[in-house]
Length: 171
Image (cartoon, rainbow, N blue to C red; front, side, top):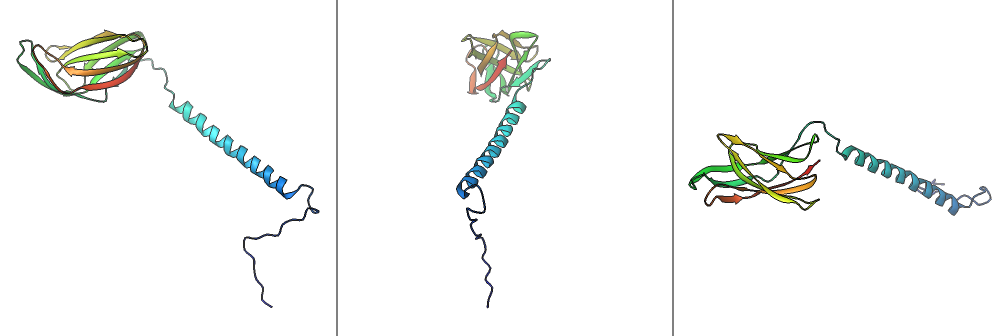
């Protein structure tokens, strides 16, 4: 006589051997498994939210606007000025709420920053000249979420090939 092994099939327990019907036992196991999976997913989400929250900083925060400005600025006489191709940095500080300072990151920058506070609706411009002598632009933007576009500047007709742009938060 040959012995045949049955794989993956187990005999069903008889209802006389258990006090709980088979369908009820399976459903309670399924509920317990769903609760465990839910707890694990919730713990992962809470961990992700807590670790992604920004911390308050005591010092100034520099935000480099991700899209650089590129073009040809004009000098004070309207003639051709420096070539501009760089990022602009917006610096904020918790000790000076509502104020943003702009500066170029790669040197000479004859730029005009056109900013708007999305929280309050206030808008303005800040003219920058980063050459000799270097000057920066300080703007009273108010607290909130700000966006900006950056163009080349100068007297006459400066040429902006790629306007810079970015977003930052002012305390």
